[in-house]
Length: 481
Figure 1 (tube, rainbow, N blue to C red):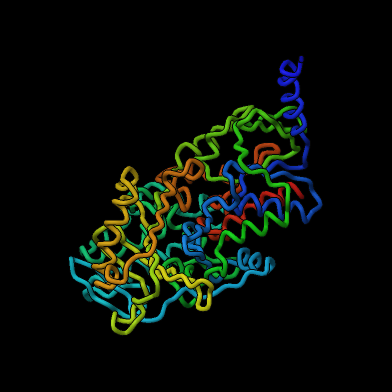
Figure 2: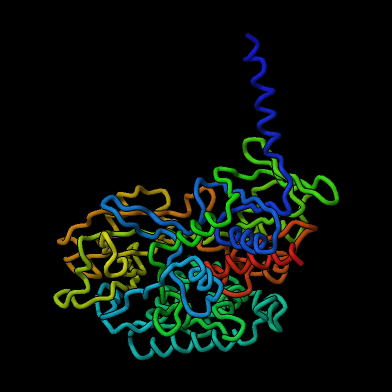
């Protein structure tokens, strides 16, 4: 008869049962958080991973298709020198296959469609092409002077950080065609416009596109073959990296958003979840993008540098629209033998790829994908998916011909990372002028036993899955040391 009166007590007991103590509490089950957990597990440390979403992977996500198979709506490419993610794929028994890059690319410029062989830089007029090559060469030359581990300590860091990437471009007196190609490359790599980036941030990002023995270069960021960042894909989809790693590790709690991290005493932190339950750890790893990490309440408050960093960095704006067909008709000779890659100065779909699954996959999946980025993504954030697919469908017809319509889209998949509560954009957080030189060290600087991971805090491959893993391994090393 008194059972209803006991329910509050039982709930309190249930919550208190969750208040376990670990060597480390990890906030976020993306590849940075799971990477930290992997390194801690290998060192014999106890941990729990708390993930706000109902899945693992963060901005790495497979989307199941109606007729079977899947498509990748988040990070999907892997390239040479991305040593950590390559090693993890091998360890988890995942096979890689090359991104399709056979045939002709499409350039849609000034309302004119032309095709060209699959080179990273679309051919325009001779003057514009020369200007583009000059800009890339100048970027790569400046990158040689970047301190990859601590870009804010580079010799010319203050000078570079006083200007935007767009301001740096002005003395080149670019033609409209050259400007279009550079802007298209910047939007594809960073998912923001050139005037939103500090030159220092842009240079450090390019410098990070390498490893301990290979210098980063802008060419690598925009290429597929010959060591490009878009060289390979994961058979089964990139989210398998997170899924299999989480299964191997165990102790990952989903639908567990963290609201507060409080230092209980000199040796312990209490982490409070959205439902009021708590867990305790000697260390805490915050494995998430700086703007998202700012939504957590910290007691005591974080140092000013860290707080200002998280306030001033902003997420890029990115999404994907994917058209699934019965077959990859654009590869046929009658349609021009196309790679599925297009670069455009108009429409919503400004950069496209063939996103078909590898030959022999059951069921077969043939798809064209476009990134939705920067101003284009922001313009469509408040529009319906139907409006997005209608515009992208028109763009595909303009780029690839009537086959994009006559072959019939079996299914559209649209992913808008800007609208995801626990992403708010992507692929990474970027920095404008003054942020790195004033607050950059706070990206990696621990605060007591509070550690920070996330791809933004990596030395190599910032913004990529490899960078996420590296940051997690680094945070774990701080604990294991």
